[in-house]
Image (cartoon, rainbow, N blue to C red):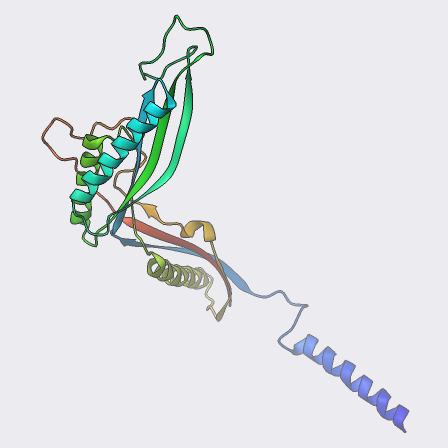
Length: 259
């Protein structure tokens, strides 16, 4: 009796599985009817921060003299920036580098190259102090003016190289989430357009794949990538001006919809 019941239970179980596979929602014999579409969205805002990448470079015949002059000029720059009394102005050192100046080769314009010296002889030292200055202003016009004031003041006080002036949005998380949502809406709308052309209707969304690489913000303007010496407005009596431009966040997604 028990064996008969066990056999019946097994038969019923196998029959149930077959029915589910044959007519149920997990039908692996019939390909799913799907539409794949892509969508994108860009959210635009104004930057509220700017970071200046500055350097003070000094050269001397001895390491002590090069370091002393460098420290003096860096302190002068810092004091001048503090005197501007700008809100939320911050500065920090990125790197301090010391290089040897040899008799043979290009002196880089430091004025200590001597053709009469034996080759490979150390004839001087170059000290480079790299630092950044961060400014925050919610108003774009005020941010532009502050960046110009800081750059001119730094150059006039001892900075002799500007590597970069970069405007950005301090917190763009809300912009990213908005771009994600709008990109999905755009992708679904595109899927419905495909479906309309085939005289079918989108039933539901099965898969949403976001493009992580597309979520990095980009700047649509402003001053970036300035390298080498930067003359600014020194001696011209006119302050350096900036146009911060826009801070853009773009999201690209791919959706798979069932119809």
